[in-house]
Amino acid sequence: MSSILEKVKGCVTVSGGKVDVKDAKAVRGIMDELIYEAIFTADDAQKKDLLRLVIEIAKKMGAVPSSI
Image (tube, rainbow, N blue to C red; front, top):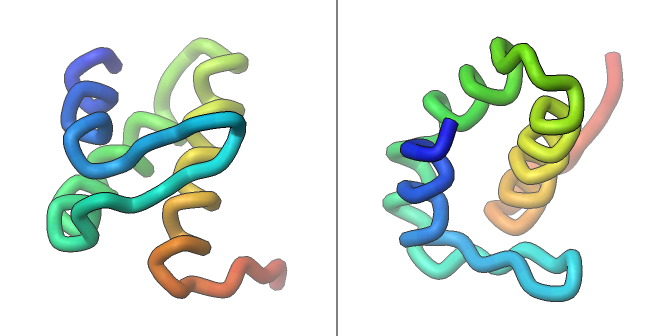
């Protein structure tokens, strides 16, 4: 998991619980990998944190969260 987080650090900052996207193009390039890691990680705490990160990044990028 550390390799995906290293990639994310280059284009996203998290401070005080707030996510800021520094490089939208780079985020688009790693989002699939980040989502894959969030879904398939065995650690429940990491899964929760990664899923929250995915949601917050998506909101910053203009996606509207919803439920079916």
